[in-house]
Amino acid sequence: MSGRLEGKVAVITGAARGQGRSHSVRLAEEGCDIIAIDWCRNIDSNVYAQANAADLAETVRLVEALGRRIVPIVADVRERSEMFAAVKKGVDALGHLDIVIAQAGIAPLGPDVPVQGFIDSVSIMFSGILNTIDASLSYLSAGASIVATGSVAGLMQGATNAPGMGPGGAGYSHAKRAVARLGHDLAFQLAPHSIRMNVVHPTNCSTDMLFSEPMYKSFRPDLENPTKEDAMLAFPAMQAMPIPYVEPIDISNAIVFLCSDEARYITGMQFRIDGGALLTSSTSGAPA
Ligand SMILES: NC(=O)c1ccc[n+]([C@@H]2O[C@H](COP(=O)([O-])OP(=O)(O)OC[C@H]3O[C@@H](n4cnc5c(N)ncnc54)[C@H](O)[C@@H]3O)[C@@H](O)[C@H]2O)c1
Image (cartoon, rainbow, N blue to C red):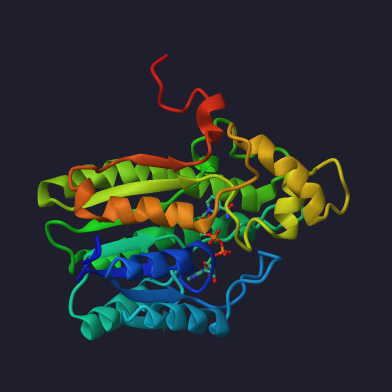
């Protein structure tokens, strides 16, 4: 039986671990070849470690085990020239490009983070997404699908400048809001070319980003040094459904659908995978 993405090629940023690895594997299961981009280096304003070369090698191993081709590339999404070279290298090796999944990210939360944290958040999660799309655009044709990763943080009222989140947290929600808007405005420009763009908005997702000290502190501001166990008590309050978080595979499954021909007329969507996190918010899209 052929897969839902048989013969397609996808570029995925932040592919070394977490959601990016899950998307790489899940798309490969559906017959897609992968251009896997990750910087594999730490970001100074972000206290928890980013992925490393061994993580990216593991993504390669998992995709190759499925019999698909994968081109791993170390590049920084903030650097336009690196991204243009990376996407070109991937397309040269795999022949074409049909899917763009722009989702590398950091979460430099907390009041002690310098203002540079704001710049780093926006550079990676907004400019980085724009660079990824820009570097890919000339290879895309009718039927192509772009998915950017936002966050429920970008759709919640009042998330920017929330108390205790610091400059990096403000930059995080600024970037996510901007990505949501980009998904609307750019989708309109791409529509006449039959190229689609959608934005997925995860709630808490079970990755190293969620299981990080700054995230524990943001969920438990009442404690000085909250542990993972302390944060686990607070995680469920985010969702209307009785869960602490979703799994990367939940985001990957939504992305497979959005990139498949089943979604051929779906574009400009703010696609929430959030266990109902936004149902308590007036921004959920329901009529007033
Ligand atoms: N985990 C959550 O709770 C959650 C919730 C909502 C949205 N998101 C979003 O999901 C996306 C994926 O995050 P994740 O949860 O898999 O976290 P993660 O920390 O596991 O993965 C992020 C990946 O991005 C890479 N990266 C960071 N900076 C980069 C750069 N400059 N260039 C290239 N690669 C870079 C890292 O090395 C890492 O592999 C992010 O955009 C994040 O904001 C996460």
